[in-house]
Image (cartoon, rainbow, N blue to C red; front, side):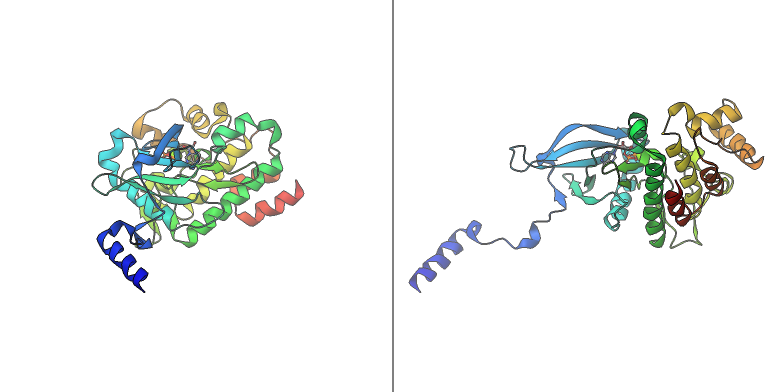
Length: 304
Ligand code: ADP
Ligand code: MG
């Protein structure tokens, strides 16, 4: 008993010896000083993503993570955007959606970085042109199915992605893909089944359905159109000379700003569509035109 009392006394004198309540160690809060940048992974309109090692022990044994922050020029207007993206990704759990790991705070306690799992093969846009010869049509269709599954899940959560494109689909390995980049994602819960786009300047217009372009209205099904454009990118192995932007621009002629959207809408209204990619079987082409659903592609995989 004397020993216990001595120990208690010792503990009272030295608060550091007291076991810390576990709640203060939050594994989803990453300390900036332990995040060591290895290289840049990529960047889009607003954000940039870096490969870092989170190395609290400082002996290079820490895990690799992908860290997204806003580009300095978009920090002011887009400050809240990253917080929204963080909140959305944090609540999503699906095999085909990139995994949230946590956040990194600045001095004022605001979340300035989004920490995600690192997917070593990068996006389909980078991967497919390089590994064309080892990627069969069946594999491409399997990727398409997985994108559908991730998107279907997103839809059940009442979210529209609004930026579904090959550049935003990441590979975990040669067989598995995951949807990333929820920077433009919106909830349709508070609305009438659609979201009204407020800032259309940075919209990926060549991936957008006509209603998004003409009325700035975005429905769950508008993502299905973008899925069709993404499927087109997959079948062309993301060959940049055949990219949706490249082909639509050659269809409508060189334009700028609002003129681009007007001419694009005009072309779509006339029934113009992306061409059938080389080597694309007729059934897949029909699917592309229908912007069809998951089951149809799963069936096709058995045929190919
Ligand atoms: P932005 O909103 O700026 O477009 P993204 O989230 O799309 O940012 O990321 C930009 C690029 O960084 C992607 O196209 C991809 O190449 C790369 N990237 C993003 N997240 C990861 C990740 N978790 N693992 C590996 N590469 C990634
Ligand atoms: Mg992106």
